[in-house]
Each structure stands twice: as C-alpha cells, then as structure tokens.
Image 1 (tube, helix red, strand yellow):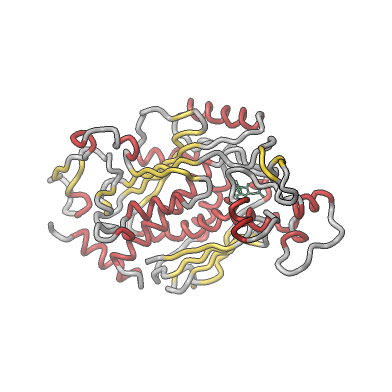
Image 2 (image 1 turned 90 degrees about the vertical axis):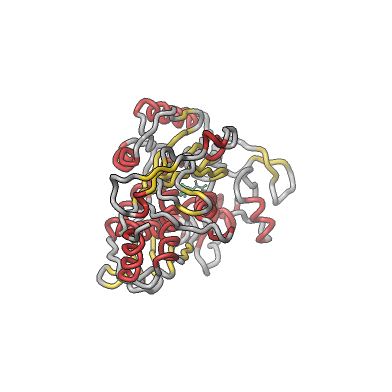
Length: 398
Ligand code: EPS
C-alpha cells in the first residue's frame, strides 16, 4: 500500500510531499512531474499568487539516476512568496517590532474568522486567537504537494497503461449539458480551455460567470469530473469496508479543500431511478483478447467503474462538487475573537474560482488511490514483481 503525506504552510519556506512504499525500479521523469504542477497553477479565476509561484519540484530522496529505489520519495516545492513572508512566518525568529503596515495586518489582524473556512474550528481546537496558525495549513496551497506526489504515482500507472483525465462539469450556475465526452477528448482537449471545459460555448459562459463574480467581489464553486481508464478488474475489495475502492476514491476527493460532495458514476441521480434502468448489463465480448479486463463488458457505465467496492474494468468516473471559496472580498458577518464583538471576516488574497485547478488535484488523488490499490494486489516491492503479477492476471483464462 502506498502512503503519502504533505507538510508546509501556504506562506512558509516550502511545501513537502512524501510517498512511502513506492516500488523500486520505476523510471520517473521530473519533466512529467512539473507538467502536472503547471496544470494545477493554471485556470481562469486564479489569484495573483499563481503569478508569483513557479511550482518547480526538487526530488530530495527515493530516486537514483531517475529510477525509484524503494525508499521514501520526498518532493520539495519552494514557495517563491516566502521572501515576502519571512518576517511573519519564520519558524524561530520572533516577529520583528518594525513591520510594514501590510505585514502588520497579515501578522496580527487575523482574529475575525471567515464563515466556511477552517478558521474558527481550528482556532478553538489549537487554542489560538491568531487565525494565521490555522489558515496557513488549511489553505489549498497544500495541494501543490499532492499534485507532485500524484504525478509520481501517475507514472507508475502509465507503465501499466492506466490513464487519468479530468474536465470541469460546472462553474456557478453554468453547467455542461447531457453531451457525453470520450476519455480521449478529455485527455487531449480539457487543458485547451481556460476553465478546462470541453464545450467551447459553455467555456465562454463559465469565464463570464467568473468575471462577474470577481466584479461582485464574490466567489464561485462548481463540479469537476475525473476518469480513470484501463483499470484492471478487482482493485479494492468487497470484503472489508476500509478496503473498498469507491470509499478510498471518495475519501481522496473529499479531502480536497472546498469539496463538499462526491459521487461515483451515476451517483445521486441513480437514487431516483429503478434498478432495471440503473444496473449496467453484462456481456461477453468474444472479439476481444483474453484480457480479463476486456473480455467481460458492460453495455453502460452507470456504476462508474466500481461494483461491490471493486473496479469492474469499466472507466472509473468520479465527480466532486466544490463549494465557493470562503475568502470573500466583501464584508461577511462574523465575530472578532479579540473583542467578542460583531465584525467583518478577514480578507486575504485568494482566488475567485478554483474548479479547473481542483480537477487537476482530483486527478492526483485518483492516481494515488489507484496506484496504491494496484501495489496492494500486485506487490509493492519492485517493478518486475508487479509486472509479473499484472501480466499473469491479465492473461489468465477465465
Ligand atoms: C493557492 C495558493 C493560495 C491561494 C489559494 C490556493 O495563495 P495565497 O493565499 O497566498 O493567495 O491562492 O488558496 C485558497 C484558495 C485557500 O482557500 O486557501 C495555491 O497554490 O493553489
């Protein structure tokens, strides 16, 4: 099983991602990692921070000559913005007595929790009135480290021809219609739209929606979809709640900042339809090779590629709904922790809409979950061991 965790404050020196139990023998390209980092930084609706950061990854450990060696892989992403925050965020040095007015504000004027943010619960939990101690880690900046780790997991998946793509289904009230898009369309075209939407008309409408929200000093949520292709049958398990693949995927998506809902396949819509319509009919495709994952097929994919907690060989389809970002550039009612009096919530530099970037983070989380499930079945020590197990499984007559 792969494990990964991240460290780093949004305006600290840097972010770190750490993957444990990554099998040895996989070739990793730094260029491919940085490509994913670049995708996360983009998207219409992002704030000024993304113009400051380059989000280039340095690999600190776990690789030699571009090949994994079975030891923990540590990724470092420096925060370029750190130079502006040194006085406030230094791990040891006290905050200097002489600060610029804007630094003073960022350091001390942080006692008015934003509704919808981690601010208030974190303040109570960590016993602090300085919300910076909470918000720095709650920030979605942390997802840069996730994407670095996901980009490594993704290269393991690519070795087994497992691919991941995403697109944006809705932003604010603009929603993609019933039109279906193939995996290849998603893979090739989503990045061409500034909002990662595959319908050019809807793309324009989404951009306009974001533009309006910015003008109104508001923020917007939306829905993104992640799909995974060529996942072999049987990843995850029906046997234990904690090993179910859909549960792991949902957990991965739900953990992304601002996600409030996750569905697999037809998800919430299937709750309102009869079973005779919902369940994907099985047939045997004689024309195809004897590959286990190709031989038995479904006429539809309402299940979104998971049945009974296990992958069923169909494309895995996950959708996640994100609430609008809770940092608003307009007054939102709250209470000042310093005085206990009514106040307006703090305003920090932020984004208007993050759905295009959140979809890239969703891809990274899917990559980690699927790669982890794959190592669970086919062995986590070395590429050769995994390869042997994988090809035996796929060639097995059934
Ligand atoms: C982000 C960096 C942050 C925010 C955003 C995501 O930078 P800053 O707070 O310095 O402007 O732009 O974070 C949030 C949306 C949030 O809620 O914290 C990034 O790198 O993705």
